[in-house]
View 1: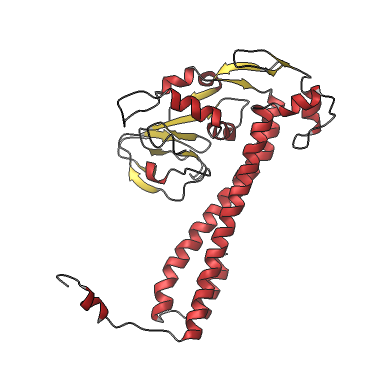
View 2 (view 1 turned 90 degrees about the horizontal axis):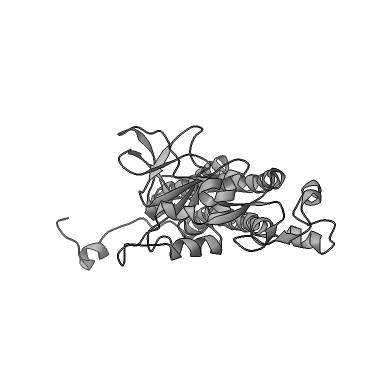
Length: 301
């Protein structure tokens, strides 16, 4: 049509399935949406727990405080790790920290914008700023694009938006959606963080989600109004207490399975959403009957 108006649209014929068929269609599609929502809630709960453990162990030092107060165990911490903890906090440049834990600059504890090999023009997974998550670690969508100019990353890296208002909005991602040894890329407005041994990859993501890190980054933004950003060199000035290897490894053993479970749920939800969007017009038009859709849904699940 050269143009559209309400009269033309009002005259369009369409198939109206019988009421019982409409209800059956709604039931099938509703089950898919329910499963997607269940996966979202599970992911939210798992990440909340992982970040709570990170904060207790490595920001608030609750196990050390509990041990200093006479406790013989700490609920979320393996007993051998708790037994090896110091019994007091000592003063440092960043305030009280567990005795024996080294205070380091973030740029010494992590690789900041590490080198990743990706040739000009190579087609690779691309994550744009629009699809960076503001809550949760997993982006919902990425695409394939020939590499031009941008930050490169691989599984295990953490991406932090460094430009306003994306930084303030909490755009942060943990990269776990690539194939083994695959390199992805994205905006030049990302800072890429990769922890050095003994810190596990998820350590950087959990740190980047803390209020303390976010406030530090925001306070170190510079540039003209509306285009302020955090320079990567600002990471030279952020300091943290680096835990001993046994505590770092113990945290990884707890948090990494949670993030793996979240990723599995996200992958499943992507497939379910694709199935839902594929089925909807075909069910409404009668090209596919509900019983066929139910079989397809069971196969995907």
